[in-house]
Amino acid sequence: MNTKIFSIFLIVILIVNMVLFALQRINALIFWGTIIICAAFAYLVLPKLK
Image (cartoon, rainbow, N blue to C red; front, side, top):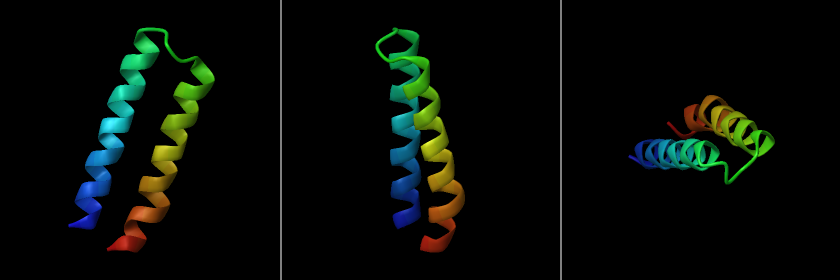
């Protein structure tokens, strides 16, 4: 159950990230940094929580 909550939280963060980037509220470095951090978390941390 915890992995589902974390996964939904990551998806929400990524959607907000895309919206803010589309509205030009954040720059490209923050946009790609957020995507890389979320991907690393999903690839490295979430499997260990199972």
